[in-house]
Image 1 (cartoon, rainbow, N blue to C red):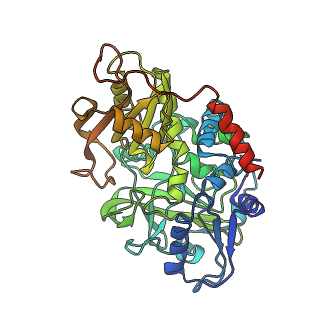
Image 2: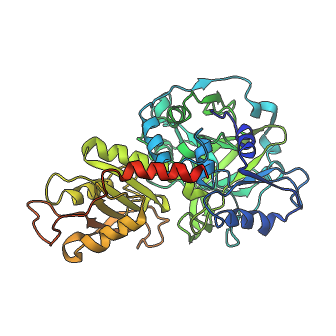
Image 3: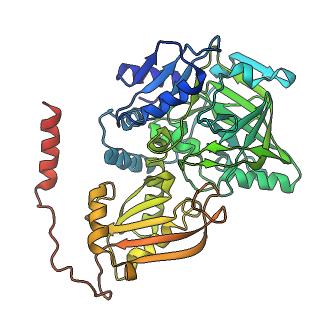
Amino acid sequence: MAHDDLRTFLDTLEEEGQLLRIGEEVLPEPDLAAAANAAGRIGEGAPALYFDRVKGFDDARIALNVHGSWRNHALALGLPKETSTKEQVEEFARRWDAFPVTPERRADAPWRENTVTGDDVDLFRILPLFRLNDGDGGFYLDKAAVVSRDPDDPEHFGKQNLGTYRLEVTGPDRLAIQPVPMHDIAQHLRKAEERDEDLPVAITLGNDPVIPIVSGMPMAYDQSEYEMAGALRGAPLPIATAPHTGIDVPWGAEVVIEGVIESRVRQIEGPFGEFTGHYSGGRRMPVVRIERVSYRTRPVFESLYIGMPWTECDYLVGPNTCVPLLKQLRAEFPEVQAVNAMYTHGLLVIISTRKRYGGFAKAVAMRAMTTPHGLGYVSQVIVVDEDVDPFDLPQVLWAQSAKVNPRDDVVVIPNLSVLELAPAASPAGITSKMIIDATTPVHPDDRGNFSTPAKDLPETAEWTSRLRSLLAAR
């Protein structure tokens, strides 16, 4: 079943036992963020959390941890909640092949029910804002989808970008936005500022469950996230036209914020507890001037706790980082079997591959570092043989401990690009990158004493399925 909005997905989560309603009154700080933080500590079956009694707010409805477990992630894709992580990644890859699926344009979007414009815009009145970590510099919208168009080619649907970027509320009608240089919105803003023009944007909150997945996906510049959402949903994604900017936005959003990123205007933004598990400090960032806000009656405000893994962010950016890297690598190296890029948004990647000749695994790793996502994120790559499951960390560590000769199998490449938020970067945006080749050497790389490997028995895969079925039926 494809969900067209957040509310129907919350209903599904509740029906599946994956939504926990908190009936008691809570404090906006620290209770909300602490509860979402705790959800990431209680196991892979953690539920979404729903609060509607928050002290200091007369009429707040807040949803947290909506994608914060593999069960919830499976339900977001319309899969049984028991679907394993590896099976979810495989299904994600299968649906990728259906891309593109043209979206369905609809009228009468529910977020048109209420509108404020101009001097009446006041985010502090419309949204129940709260800090996510106690060291944050302010209130953040961190699970919003930001939509912008290429100023040089505004009618190209594929170049219209939908992405998740952190947004600090700095005033009733002002936001500070962080457009990471590797992301498409940074290219849009650069082109607009070269023209000395503002960049129109639409920002949507409380989206259907597939939008947060595709908005963090590393796709090609001219590939539409909306068309990918249709492929993942198995049905065209409903979209609507934002009335002030004319930008395409999700039909089922709870809130639509329209305005412009002001040309060549910067202000201090941050600090913020980031997906890296560390605070990033204050930096001068572009400014969004809000000109119109549309929202559903009694909107549900959705937010995302970010901190030391695992949190909801890690579930969101897991498969949607693994699969694009897999597809991009396999297009050039069909020997690549699987890619695990679930760790800190792909700063660490594990790749399993067959090899054509000696040195081949290192070449695959270097290519991973130069994909669109790799340029800004992939800083460590571990390569393993095709019979090692990159999602099975004991197998990966066995390969690393048994097959790696550090002198020959560890390669460090200095002074490469990484996103500025990476804590180990020095200076910000620059890092050394590392390849660990944990594969068995093949000719002409004839070294080591690997003799005859012990492999799984031919019947092991069948017995694995049988044992899982027997355990599930107990």
